[in-house]
Length: 215
View 1 (cartoon, rainbow, N blue to C red):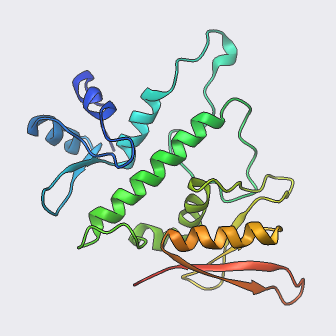
View 2 (cartoon, rainbow, N blue to C red):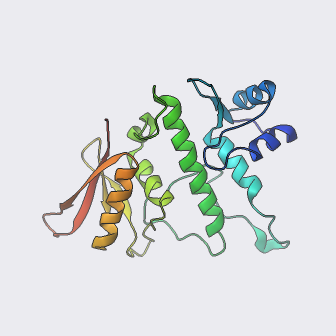
């Protein structure tokens, strides 16, 4: 479990590169963040340090403006601090919480890219990592949400829905709008997945079958 940082360590976290999460600080500061589970040391030269997903969440939380006073200033529920990508069918994000959600999604996606970089021998972020291959639905949904696609609400509107399939290495992506379905396919392919359109035999509806690329 990640330990809370000190005030000095929070300053290092806040100064991280907004895109990559790359950190600058003294060796002692960086080592302390690694010990707390908020940063990791890249295994390849020059062995830079980067925020972990937990570190990204702390930085993004610090970046949120203070809420106005009063009982209505409660922050949106984020599941006890555990980020979960929207797979489609969840309750809509409450009014006023959209900006905070965007920050959460951005931080989670950047953290996932760093996890790819950390676990690939060549430091590449082009292919999905082991976590994505063992959490297919959440990983595909995060790629879509991070790219700006809108998940379907509980009423079954025209957003995307990501669902498990009988195939152990593939998910189904449903999107009623044909053009939006093709855009989902393009997004997943850019994120390191392979996606192809298929037709459901009984209903004749089109959907994507997507799986992480291996090479």
